[in-house]
Image (cartoon, rainbow, N blue to C red; front, side, top):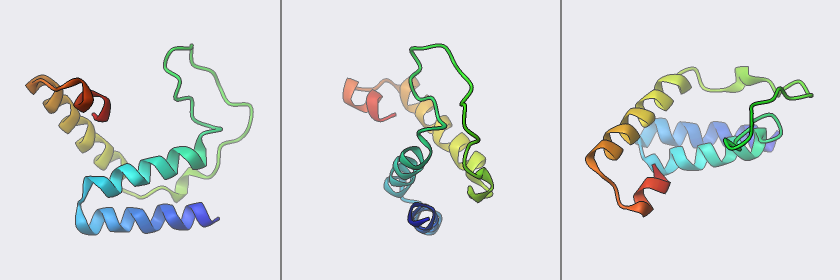
Amino acid sequence: MASNERLYEVWMLYCTKRDPDYFKIWLEIFISSYEQCLDVDFEKPPSRPDEVPPVLTLLPDNILQVLRHQLLQCVQKVSDGLEPEQQNLA
């Protein structure tokens, strides 16, 4: 439960300050909390999890809009040309 509280806390910090570092921290906590249900290995074919995933209704209401915005920023940065180090971050 502590991870859900931490997710909420970091999300509120991100929403308040609009600092991308808080978004990165939120993603790291989210992935570590839900990694047993997320397949982040893009090299292998997708599979369905055997377990029922944790309740996703605990996610922030505007998470899809924020993810879309971050993805658009990454696409823009990639189209502008990035150093290899920046590509990994994007």
